[in-house]
Length: 300
Image (cartoon, rainbow, N blue to C red):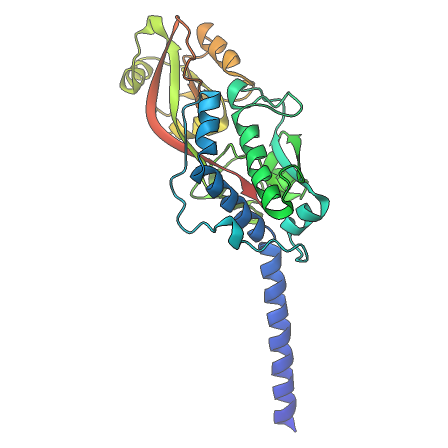
């Protein structure tokens, strides 16, 4: 009899443990299908040349990812709406909530003061969801993309105020290195969609024409400040220059703002990405750092 009760008790514990594991797995992977479908849509847009066309349209120095190994074909993704996850919620509401930084106007790469937002990054987001909407509803306009704006987008993601972030956030090997994120264990990084070089702008009168010239100038001068269009640009070069350099990345909502801070000598140099290829100012020198960074959406 004792053996019988022990067996029953062990079966009960096994059942409870399996249930706990399954529940935990569901909680940790609420966006698994969304990520798979999202990446599959990106694969479609890269394969048919639409992302390349978007890059040319906005005249920016971006390249789409070449790493599509392991990405599902869009027809292979489970698109049923009866699963308790983020994708089902989006399909039932026919609306996806996208989180972006508040008050940003980067011109051709993204003007988020417009309604709807315009420029490369918003148009890429719209293209992705048109592709998903066409696959599921046979209507590319069935799913509405709703932008919500925050000072801390990752906090909003953790609080389930949004379904996905904008695609422009810096791809990292470890999300714990990203200062913008809180409670990062809940966040999953998506595919690195776009890669680019970080470029530097300096006053032409300083005769600084490459990265070595800039490093040499910094080594001979104190209280150097370098402006970055975004925090991601700062992080890309943080280990290149001496530790005494002060990086400034807040308060710049456009290329014009950043350029003006260099022209006024408030900052020695500016670090930018996605700079329009026809950007030109006779008083500024622009050179490539050859330091590549990539950008990803983030899910919860």
